[in-house]
Length: 259
Ligand code: BTN
Image 1 (cartoon, rainbow, N blue to C red):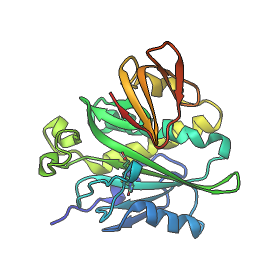
Image 2 (image 1 turned 45 degrees about the vertical axis):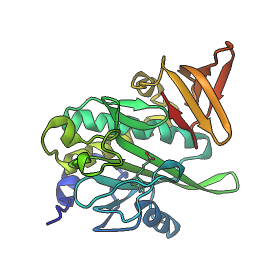
Image 3 (image 1 turned 90 degrees about the vertical axis):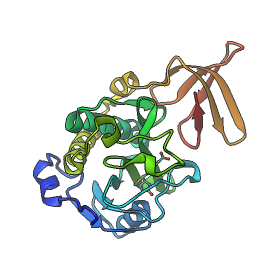
Image 4 (image 1 turned 30 degrees about the vertical axis):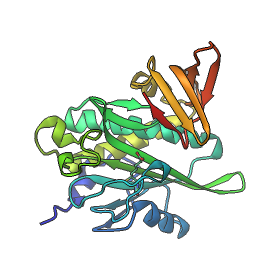
């Protein structure tokens, strides 16, 4: 029997004005990114959350797949319409909201691997995929996809068993997906609202970055930058001190980072 999310419980715990208030729930779908795009194109309100128990082709960044077994984890996509000048805050707000939700609802502390993987003990617990549809320079909508491993036994997936973790693995017991989901939506709206007012939660995000001070290699298409991850700038770009002393600025996006 596949566990189904108790949506009434999620609603009870929601403190948001609009994020997650319009909630579309699928027992199974190809990818919540695709379902959310359809909703967005039909005019779904800002903050619409598209959620699935299972994805048959969940996807990650850089064309990777996202393992999405049924009834275990959280797979959701938020339809957001920030002004273009605030678009980049989504990659700061999203991992921060996940980290804050893990702390609040599961007592689990996590770090952020630049730009927006959430990790516990060096293993990935959540990933974020942001797909933006533009009309000229304007944002039609940004689809903020978040996958959080909750009650998933990562050992059942040999291809990710060494690099991934879940709340269950970290706590040694199952956690409430409903509590985590509500905490995530609450934290997301709170942080996003601050960011829209110009108070980007940059410091809170930066202080969780586990990447800083480490030797890294960033690959962006054909370009490879290697050196010490020295800092991030106000835009969220990573500043890498090359061995020759010069500084490289690496934009979040299609980048692979190896520590
Ligand atoms: C990554 O780390 O590469 C990003 C993973 C993003 C996974 C989520 S699960 C919900 C949404 N639907 C998808 O197909 N992908 C995102």
